[in-house]
Length: 429
RNA sequence: CGGAGUGUAGUGUAACGGUAGCAUUCGUGCUUUGGGAGCAUGCGAUCCGGGUUCGAAUCCCGGCACUCCGACCA
Image (cartoon, rainbow, N blue to C red; front, side):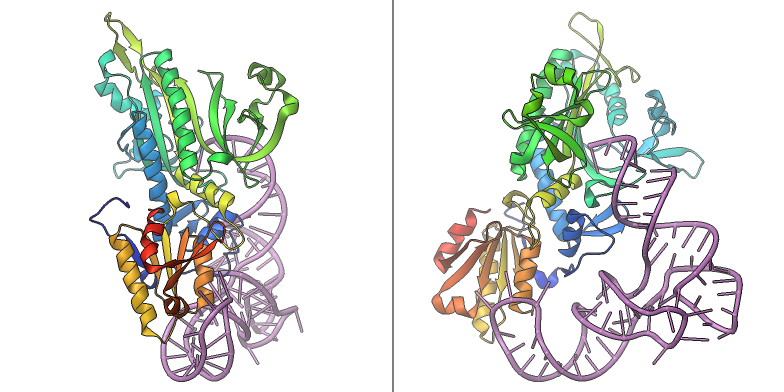
């Protein structure tokens, strides 16, 4: 967003329809949804279903940009699979029947036919690529998409951490053989690490061994440590490797070379996971290629997911404080929050307006609190919304020829001359 | 899907079976102007459907919704 010179990215708060609230809704216990609703980032529609308001959407898009960047760097190719799914396709892999998959949302066409709403993408990709993959020259392939996913969960909970409708990134790997698959699998571990670091929770997110399914001993989860978590993991703090409770056995610990007495039990949120699919889907879809010798071989698949809403919620759980949200610079809805204090001196508004225009022209993403409200309310709102850099424009500052800067993360305060403010703020672009 | 609980203005809360009140938000006017100011004034609500009763937010039945615990999952 910030490097697009043709799109000036500033917002006057008087034009932002969302408003902050002193109190969270009573039917929302989770910290993430409570704060995000209070700050006007999301709106609850029903259990497990949230709309994203302007500020929330901006955060979501930044997270999306980070993930896209990392996926593209390891060879991902973005596309978009449909949300409405064809029954016949899912019957091939035996995942249409409600007795097999009980969290489908299904609906009927006018002519009586059935369709399902996507709850995952293996079938969609396998079915599409069947048309295009026929030679070893066509592989490997790493398509992915960002998409809304629908799961008829018996119980949604924890705000945006577990919804019935959620937005995710799903990448699938289509490899010629196990070796090629493994190499890519290892690359995604690094890409995932990068994503969580860039999103601000890298130091609390650990690669975790979890149950694997029929094609590999383990799958791998990325677990972010927080008491709000639903999962229990056992972490070796030295190596940064963890084991999910579901595979926490003596035998497995030994195979991973982990000592039981060195592990600490932690609550964590699964913010991403990757797993090997082997030929589970290439077989029913007859997804094969011809190798150099002209032999037909089954494609080896892998799956790599991240729930964006869940990631956003996890970041809120981990980074927010008693005053409200605290966004890392990388995903903050805006980088700078200009807070203009009310004054009879018209110079205050003029100065704030001018600063806003200057910063926006420089390509800084700015939210400008131009509202006709008192200082206390503005400061509290600013804390709640959690933009990294606050610039206060006041009569007091103007007399001194200075702007007051306050950093949301650590509360650090500094004064800057008008000429220095651009350089300072540019660090946060 | 099992268990528990809760549904009152936009939001948060009160009301023994008897005038639906308070706070905040919002509108208007005045005062105020560096951490959710003050005064005045106004708008705005009992989840839906039945039943009991002279009378129901309140009691009973049914439905729906939401929250929490469990089972299940990005």
